[in-house]
Image 1 (cartoon, rainbow, N blue to C red):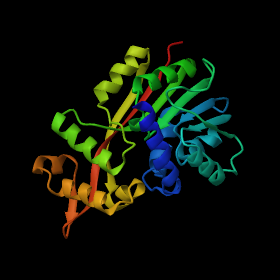
Image 2: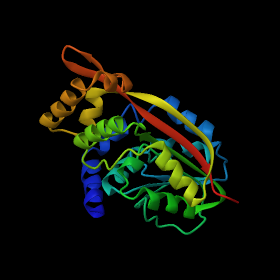
Image 3: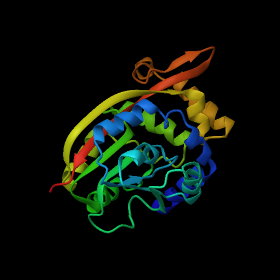
Length: 257
């Protein structure tokens, strides 16, 4: 089961490797600078960026730290990103599974992961690995889409995400992430929650080229209950979805010294 999901990730992100580099959502300059503000990196740091995708976090961190180790499960994605960022000499590219990191204990000053953890089949293993490779006192920063607390809204969101991208495992609730982080020993220092607006067409086409599935997702949103449409800010015109919003959570944690 786990390997099946990871094979889907490799297949889907090999196919969409360039669209993730160009994605306006992933390349949002304001969001990336906020990440720097929250992380407060030092020039001496070695940073691990897990599931780097299009390399937006690695690129943003590069001027502020000694070395960024940009990892991804999908080799073709990583090769494409390395080609785009070849002018940045302090980024190392390593094919790696977030749940089985190929690094020694206490190797990094900080670990980052942005808009990726919903693809990980075993999130607790991922959290354990982040804790293991961090130096004592090291910083963990994660940003990801999260599911609402209400079960019907959780189910609605994860349903259309899985239709649009069959490598999507689950957007977890904040309460679930906190439980795993605290259980592993992380101290939660900062957190914030915002609603992120996504243009429907750009979002749905990034990982799905099947027009029938695109239409299925759109119809699902169009026919949702009024309260669901309100929560996800589903905006429509002329019988089509223009945009919608989802919850995005940022957490900054620290490993005990």
